[in-house]
Image (cartoon, rainbow, N blue to C red; front, side, top):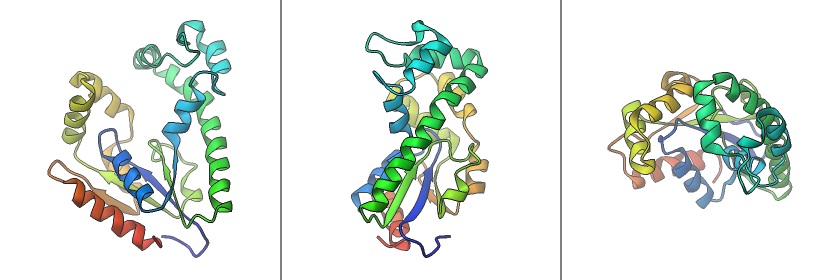
Length: 206
């Protein structure tokens, strides 16, 4: 898995509702440097974000809200009805996420970080990350658990949640790219998740 160079770089991924973000917070609490691709994507599509000029020119002013940010609900609806719109949006946002991730990685290396964890929701779908990482950690749970958790926390209808899950890599595909699987099924507890995260962090020097 990890080679001898420092710092170790882990990729952390998992489907919506898997508990990936919770696990990421646990890695951070143990001293890992977290680089969150979703957080970067929200920043570049926020008010005055790097992606907003291209989004406005590609999709029109109707997809920019009053604050100057991406109108996420409108874009979600468009992407649901026109899958090519999602591809267009990704072509704008993903290169910016990559650039900002690289900058944050360089800063972490300069600061002497021992473990950098890249929180990447679309790691499985992307072919470019594997060669940049020492290992891939997948937070895993059954699809039924994903649906239940997302409905509970967001109030989304089951068909909407199922549509989101269908747009992501399958559970099988995520497990296929994993070096380490963190199990976070329906009966898992936060202490049990914490224990697994600690084991992984210890394996890579924290």
